[in-house]
Image (cartoon, rainbow, N blue to C red; front, side, top):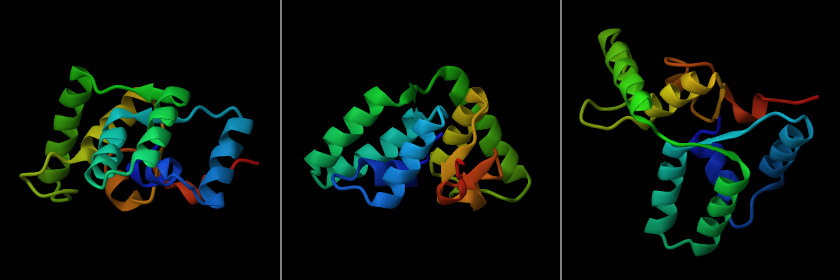
Length: 139
C-alpha cells in the first residue's frame, strides 16, 4: 500500500528512474500495489494547491490503474481506535488537533492486510507493518 511519499514520486509529471523501476519490478512480480484514498488526498491537495495539472493527470491515471482503496466508515472507526491507542501509549504521530492521515492510512492497510510502502517508517510502524519503499526489493 502506497503512502503519500512514494505516491507523490510516481505522480510526478516526470518521475525519477528509481521510483519507476521499483513500480515496474512490483508489476513484473505480480505484487498488487494499493492506492489508498487517504494518500491520494494528501498528494492531490498539494498538486491542486500548486496547479500542477500534468501531475494531477498522472495521479488520475494511477488511480485508475492501481488497485484503489476508498475510505469507509469502518476504516475511520478503526483509525480512531489506532489514533487513541498511540496517544495512550505516549507515542502520537501528529498534534492532537490534526486529523492524522497516518492513522487512516494504517487502518486502510490493516483492512487490506497490506504492508505500507513509505518514507516515514517511524510513524507508521507504530500502527502497522511499514517499510521504506526503496528497501522493498523484488527479486
